[in-house]
Every structure is written in structure tokens, then in C-alpha cells.
Length: 425
Image (cartoon, rainbow, N blue to C red; front, side, top):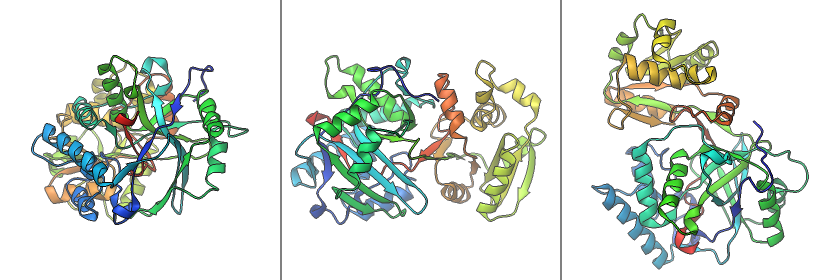
């Protein structure tokens, strides 16, 4: 995918005064961070994070109260209290931030800043997934009530990696002492630097202005940014959104699947409904071996792994007649053959007749957690094989969105290392 655009028609990234935890006021930086709000496995993961530190960021991104309005007001009150108590404090001057994540297998570096918002028709920021209206409404009310962006979107672009530009500034910056460094319980090492030098900021901004970006993670937050921008008729801080931009020509991302948990569908009922429509094979565990079998089947066509009854069931080779009756034909062949397309159009909508609502379906990133929850609640976990990044980019270039929650790019930025207050600009 060619991500270069005409000069002046690309990404516009500006510095901001980041809100950051004051290390002396918290147990540790690792203890106050969280995965993005939609990756936290609730309630177990939420309770674990809440107990990690009284100032854990989940109290802002996933506040707990009886109503949505009460939750969001509670988050605003918590934010104001932490600012008043000096738990969070703004940096002294606006900056772009270089952010690094590293584990034994991957190194990811990028730039955090406030990105000028643009409509999808502009082709500057390309979405690739649909969004759910109720999630956008919830995130919008949280941002509106707190006047803050708590977690950056993950956006990718591709440079030529040669000569001056954002990547060159990133490489130079990481040779300096960081603002913060911590290791989270998932094994990732995190470091953050502030870029305040006008010449270096200009080098980053000039380079990014030549590029377009793909939304890797955060479609709902991007849709929320655009919605809130429309509510403000005068130019101001709502015209920008907190993002992390990663050059995947230099730092390729992982692409993983997002699994479905069907709350009210037992595995036996799911399999019975598929009889004659898919090939069904029972597999022996453990989970890694079953996932290997899923990968092998997915290389040949649509395939899913069902779990929840203590075993694993490989479902593949869908009936062509079923697909012809249920899959829309008004989009490219690459979209029609996506596992997520077949799952939603053929299985959820037609065979199982399950509404795509939170009461019926949960979207879970962690494979083992999806299986565990299905077994605990006598539900069905539908485990997916990840789609290739090239397919995602090609469809996005054509302006075709994938079914919601089709992909999980990572590693995702840790939430809580740097926040943006709209009151500070």
C-alpha cells in the first residue's frame, strides 16, 4: 500500500503537554498502567488491575458505577482529584514523545503526538474496520465528561527509512536517557522520551506530512474523536486526537486475531447447527496444538476453532451453497472470503441467528481467556486465525471496511504512560 500523499495533504502531528504519573506518588509505573480499555478482560482483568495500585489507570478508562453517566462523572472526579493531589502532573512544555516497547521477540518504536483529525474521504487516516455505535457513544461521553484522551490510538505508516525524518529522530532520541522506563507484567519493557527541540520536531512533522496512516488499533476512539470534533464549531483542541504513529517499514507489527465468545450458545448446539454445512473434526488438546491445526486449515480456506466444552472442534470447508446465499457480493473477493465475513454473515446472522450485541457476543483478544470463559459459563468460544496485514492494507486502500474486530495489531501501547488533557490544548 502506497502511503505517500501530496505535500501538505498528509499527517499533521503537533506537540502537546503530556499528563504523566509522578513516580514518587505511585507504587510503580508498571502498577498503574493497563492494556487498552477494550483488551481488559472483564471482570477478572479489571479487578486485577484495580488491586494492583489505587491509582491504576483503569479507574479512568473503565470506571465502575451503576449508570454510564455516573461512570463518566466518576472518571472526571477521579482525574481532577489525582491532578489536585499531584498524582498526575502536566509536563512543563509541549512535546512530541518517542515511545519504545520491547520484549524478547519484537522492538517497536514510534511517535506520540496530537494528530489533526481528517474525514475518511480525505484518505489521510484509513480505517479498516466497522465500529459499534454504542461503544462510540460510551467513549464519546467519557471523553466529553473528562475533557481528556487517556490512551493513544495505534496508527501505522510506511517510510523509505532513508535520510532525515521521523525515524532518524527516533533513533537519535533513544540514545538519550528516557523520561521513564518500566517493565509491565506481560514482559514488555517500555521507555518514553520527550522531543522538545524545535528542529527535531520540525523534522518529524515535515516527514509525516508526506504520509497517510492506517488505523491499526483504536477504530472506536478515532470515530469518537471525529464525533466530538463535530460538536465543537470553533477551532481548538478537539480538532486533534492522541495517537502513536509507528513506521512499519522499520518496525513491523504483529497481527493477531480477535476471538468471539457467544454467551448464550452452548458448544453442542453450535455444532449441531453446523452439521452438513461445514466439516467438523474433534481435536485433542492442548490449545497450542489445536491452534496449529486451525492455522493449517485456514491456509486452505475458511476455518474456525470452537471451544467451551473441554475440547476443541475444528470447523472448515463451508458449503458453497451456504456462502452463495449469505455472503454479500457487492464488495471485493478478498472481503467476501475473510473468515470474519463468513463468521458474521453466514454463521452468526444465518445459521446461529445471534445478534451482534454485548448481551450475546464478547470480543476477546487473549486466546486462553476466551476458552476459559467459555468453559466457565457453558458458552462457545469461536477462535479465529489472524488475517494477513497485506489484506488489511489492500482493502483499506480500496475504502472497504472489514467486519468489526477482525484484527488485533500489536504490541499495543500501554495505557497510562502519557495522557492528553484537552484543557491544556
